[in-house]
Amino acid sequence: MDQTAVQPPRTYAVRTLGCQMNVHDSEHMAGMLEEQGLVPASPEDAAADRADVIVINTCAVRENAADRLYGNLGRLAGLKRERPGMQIAVGGCLAQKDRSTIIERAPWVDVVFGTHNLDALPVLLERARHNAQAEVEIAESLQVFPSTLPTRRESVYAGWVSISVGCNNTCTFCIVPHLRGKERDRRPGEILAEVAALVADGAIEVTLLGQNVNSYGVEFGDRQAFSKLLRAAGAIEGLERLRFTSPHPASFTDDVIEAMASTPTVMPQLHMPLQSGSDQVLRAMRRSYRSTKFLGILERVRAAMPHAAITTDIIVGFPGETDEDFEATLRVVEEARFSSAFTFQYSPRPGTPAFELEPLPKAVVQERYERLVELQERISLEENRAQVGRTVEVLVAEGEGRKDGESRRVSGRAADNRLVHLALPARLAGLGAEGGADPRLAEALDPELPRPGDLVEVEVTYGAPHHLVADSALQGRTYRVRRTRAGDAWAQRERVKAGLAQEEHSHGPTAVPGVPVPLGLPVVRTALA
Image 1 (cartoon, helix red, strand yellow):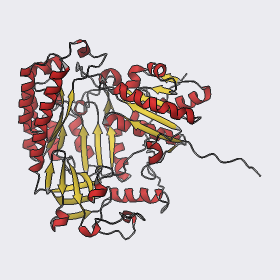
Image 2 (tube, helix red, strand yellow):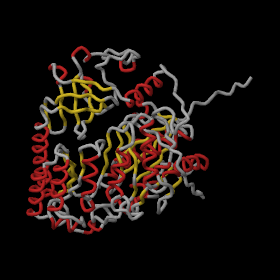
Image 3 (tube, one colour):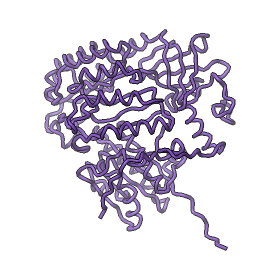
Image 4 (tube, one colour):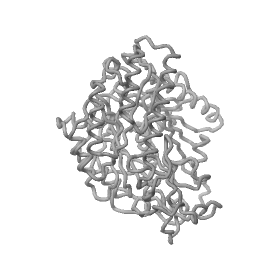
């Protein structure tokens, strides 16, 4: 009789630093690891770095990116000494930039791979384990389009779909084109097939991703390709919400606005990076638009979609920015009435043209930054207070509300992407709070109890700068739950996790939500010498 013990599968955790593109890349990394037989570490083990393989997917946009990476790696050094066989891999933009420097500074790292060769991760991990030495492989151009790789979706009700990678712009402050390469566009049929596969798997919301989504089509010479893509994706049966990020003001055209307004599934939300309200600074940044054009875009979007929420990115303290330049930014922000803004102090990045410019005094940048934040906080509060009394439909989500447990609310996003914390009817507020079976997984589900992925219609009762509150259910006003396929998919996934149901298998492109998603698209493999 064979007494050999069956070894449990190795576990993994992927830690993501940076933008939505990185989040989606991390889903591909997880999918590839699961295809090799690894399983996700439990949330508790992942939080404590108790996994056999830990992958850090890095960002290089901000100056503190390296500090965050090496801080993480420093904490992992001691854990690795205590866990024989543990492997650490570093990928993403900072890995593409720093390369073997990472191994020099943190010799306990096993694998370094870049933005152009995500597909190499499993091979590099195995090679490092076999050879007992670090493996560094950085490609200079895209080897495999990431969307052809296996994917482990974090959410069953919403998903990312990349339409392009790379960027052809030459903004003087930005390192992304150097690390992600020139723009490469996927063919429309591949994108639509992936959206359809996500919807077939239960998703009702999809976000189209690209460094500059509205320049989509540049590779195959169709200047209206993005608006056509919006219309086609928005028409896929079962999709209820379609978003995209991020566009560039220079190439944002009226056909896109028309497609947004005329396609019911395209949400009334737009993230439009301003960066600066000063034409002089925009010129120094090589942002090929000016403030008047930017404001004109916002005016036309709001004319077509009156309730659109518009957000932005702004950099304060770019080299050479004068008091007059900064005042121009404040004027544009006041006129633009952004619902929210991601504001940053200028961060010099080696390898960018602006890195050679003389920086402004830190105290000057800090003072301007605080004034900008104060202005935007006021505008955000005013804009959100103006939402009070409106009826909104909220897609209930997992993990959106940090205080949901103590406040007895659930959270999610309205159509315009505002964060909404909504109260349940009083009789449901404490349901499941004492532990035991999750009432959201019950076969006889209470008709007023929403699950992640379900849609709830509520009335906004309070507006804060960064969120809305909808307590209408407690006031006898609007509260309606709409069951969705996405909520069903979430419940099925959770039942499987809890051992209450078996995985559902199909002959379609996917099996159970939450496991790798093979899309049936061609995968190009390269030899790894």
